[in-house]
Amino acid sequence: MVEIKTILVAVDFNKTVKELLNYAESLAEKYHAKIWLLHVTDPEPDFIGYEPGPQYIRDLKAEEYREEHRNLQDLCDSFLNKDIQVEALLIQGSTVEMILKEAEELQADLMIVSTHQHGFFFNLFSESVSLELFKKSNIPLLTIPVEEE
Image: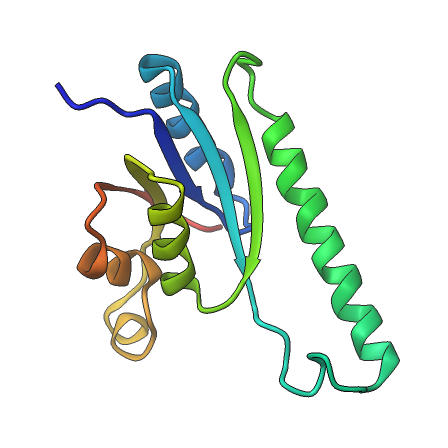
């Protein structure tokens, strides 16, 4: 029998995130697993890095990161079963690469992501994070189809 002790849930902050959390909570209860909620945010623009740049842009980005971290923490607090261990991670970088890197570092036994239902032309011209994860991951991946309103 497969033992699932660590579940990585890649989240974005849309209306469908609760569906992912419901699946994660159900599996964590069944397997007594720890959940890591991961949100990958855009990397800092080159001119913001460590070089002097416009302070107002640095301030805006800092506030954006604080807000995303608060949102992640709120998601952690939203689990009904308070016995489940849940931690949040906010990292910067390329979404697919960072999810795979964190899953490996955390020794995740399962990843959970949403997959959005789009038409042919949208899929033709855009990158699907869930599809790229499916192609590149060595870790089992549970994709939850969601419809955005």
